[in-house]
Image 1 (tube, rainbow over the protein chains, first blue to last red):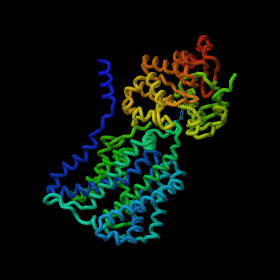
Image 2: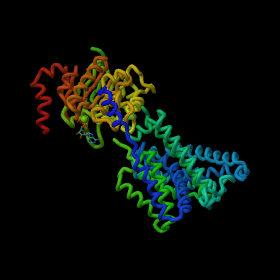
Image 3: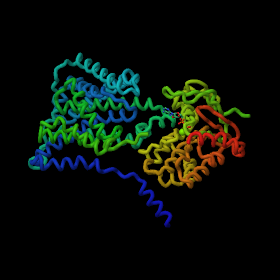
Image 4: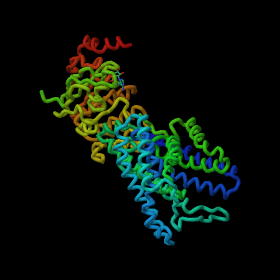
Length: 340
Length: 241
Ligand SMILES: Nc1ncnc2c1ncn2[C@@H]1O[C@H](COP(=O)(O)OP(=O)(O)O)[C@@H](O)[C@H]1O
Ligand SMILES: [Mg+2]
C-alpha cells in the first residue's frame, strides 16, 4: 500500500510541468496595453490585428526555427521563400479572377486553397534545390552560410523580378473575405484577420500532431536536441534535414500567401522585410522550439501593433527591445531546447 | 579461436590538428565482455567514437562482423548492429522515456517481452515511462541510455563509463544489469575507470595510454597480478595527479 503511494508521488513529480510563464506574457502584454490604448474597441481591433499578424509570422518562422535547431544552419534565404510563395499566388489569382470576385464562399475559399497549394509546392521545390545547391556545401560554417544564403536569396529575387516585374503588385481579397464583422456594439473585426488566425492555428496544431504523434516528429525533436545521437541510433539525419528544410520552405511560401493578402500588395522585398521580425521570433522563442515560436510570434506582433498605435516613433525598435528583455530573462529564449 | 566480432588494426584518429589515436590495435571476440581501461585522456572515448564513425579514422582498419566499416557513415554502422551508449548518456531530454525507447527500436515498435526484461533490470524505467527524460536523475538517465541499447538485440554494445558519477547502490544495480546482459550472450565493449566494476564484468581487457593499446589479455590475469595492475593503472594515476 505505502509502496504504491510512494510510486505515485514520484511519478507525479517526474511528469514534466508545462512552463506557463511564457504563455502568460502575451496575455499580460495585452492586458497592460488596454488602459494605455484607452478605448476598448481600438484595443480589440489592434489585438485581433496582432493575433492575425502573429499567426502569419508563426507560419513563416516555424520552419526556420526547426532548420536552425536541427542542423544549426543560418538561412537568410528563408525570406525569399516568403516572397516566392506570395508571387506564386498570382499564378492562381490572375486566371481565376472570377473565383475571387464571385459571391460564392466556396469559390472564394477554393481560390485561397489553390493559392496556398501552388505556393507551397513551388517554394517546397525551390527549397529542395536550395538545400542541395546552396546549403549543403556550407554545413557548419556560419559565416559562409550567411553570405551564401544571402546570395541565393538575391538570385531568386532576381528571378521573380524577371517574371513579375519590379513594381509592387496589388492583389484583391476574395469577395467574402473583405470588410469587417461587427462583434458586439462597437468592435469590428476584419474577416481576413480571422481567417489568418484560423489558418495559423491549423498549422500549429498540425505541427504539434506531427512532432508529438509521429515517428518522423520524434526524430525531428530528438535531432534538434542531439543530431549525433540520432545518427548513432541508425537514422540518417541528412534525409530528415532535407525533409524539414523542404517543409520549412513550403511553410514560408504559405506564410507568403497569407502575408500578401494581409497587405494586399506584393513586393519582391516583402520576405526580406519581414525576415528581421522572424529572426527575432526564432531567437525569442528558443532555437528549435515550436511552442516558443508561437508565443514569440504573438508577442512580437502584439508589441509591434500596440507601439505603432501608442508611439509610432518607438515602433521600430520595440521588437529589438523586446528581444533584449526576453534574453536578459532567459538567454536561451522562452523555451530553451536542451542541447548536448 | 573464433573470428572476432570487432577488430581494430592500426587505427589513427585526428581531431582537428590533434593526433589522438596513434595506432590502436585490439579485437573484441564474439560473445565476450571486453573492458577498455586507461587513465583520463588516454583516448578511450575517441576509440568508441571512431568505431561508431563519429570521428573518421585517418589511417587503419575497423572491421565489424567481417566487414570493413572504417569509412561507413554512422547510421550505417549503427544499422549493421552496433549500439552505442556515450559517456554523456545523450538521452533526448525533451522526449519521454517511452519515446526515447521507441526511437531506439528501429523496428518501429517496442517488443513487449524485451520491455518487460528491461523493466526487470531497471524498475525506474517502468515507473517513469511517461516522464520526460530530462526530469530523470543522473542514474536513471544512465539506465535509460542502457535501456535504449537493449531495446532490440544488437550484435555489439559499446558503453562509455556507465558508472561515472553514480552512487554505489546504483553502480551495483548497473553491474547486476550488465551481468544479465552478458549472460544473455551479448558482446560488449565497456570503457570503465572503476576497476572493481571492470573486474566483475570483464572477460578480456585492453589498457590504453596516449592513444595506443599498452596491454591486452584476460581480465582474470590482470585481476590476479597486482604488480601489473600497479604498472598499468596505478602508475598512470600517479603520473597524472
Ligand atoms: N573534440 C576534441 N577536440 C580536441 N581534442 C580532443 C577532443 N576530444 C578529445 N580530445 C583529446 O583527445 C584525448 C583523448 O580523449 P578521450 O578519448 O576523451 O579520452 P578518455 O575517454 O580516455 O578519457 C584527450 O587528450 C583529449 O583532450
Ligand atoms: Mg572518456
